[in-house]
Length: 394
View (cartoon, one colour):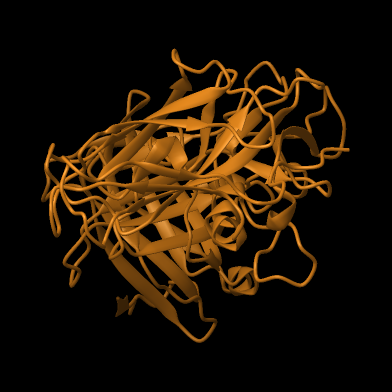
């Protein structure tokens, strides 16, 4: 930043954008100005939510809410430089970040940003902004798309950082820019747009109902209603929803299940024989009778997400030996990898009474830690709970 000394300069802030050093010419500049709105950026069409992938713990994020005026879109004959003026009255918007997008012939060709700026009325201040080429970390999206309503993000390694960080400029009332307002969106940091205006249902980022179900959360849209809804799909064990416990039903289902699964003290327990101390499993395929006279019809792993716990994966299928039982396959990184000390799995099955509403139970898998610790003498032990564990679905 530098002071502008010209006598006829108006007080305020100037962005002097230049693409000459990078060999960039442009005929349009767009200034995505934003005021700070938090530290978490949304999942987008180009960077969607994946429950099997854990975000990098060292990624820094910055969310800013866009402040738009028509002058933020500047057109010019093809050039390498342009200066944009913000008058002192712009200071009332509390904006502090700008992402500059340069285009030529309607195609983005350059990017630049100012991470922190101020607007004063006591002088003219210039921020010199050098354009760089478009890269794969840039994304522009929105439903519907418009110059005033488009959202942008830029993921890159910024100066002083050891890892990439993501900055996003989004709509003030629609943070994932999918067309559903924040108060009518099931997850306003998870893009789920439909250009046709149809309702969008999320499974893994759904909801927990008042009756202790995993539900499908349905965004409100102008074609449906003005309120989001939660349609119950999987009835959870009663122990998951106890008033006053540590787990909050208002959390996202994956977070809620991660907490509640440890509260289900009464569950099916499988003690698995291993090949000696810290040895691998004697068998990776385990037959487990379903509790409470349930039948293992079309079983699904509700938690952990996609059946993945660390480096292990659990799958479930209906047993071919016992039609009321389930067959679980425990797959580790290698055949002889030591299994986790304990693994709890929430399994849902089709209900007999309510075919469109599934029920669920918990299975705990624990490797044997006391003799015999070999596959010749160690037997698989399945302990059924002494009291009912299945939900009492209303």
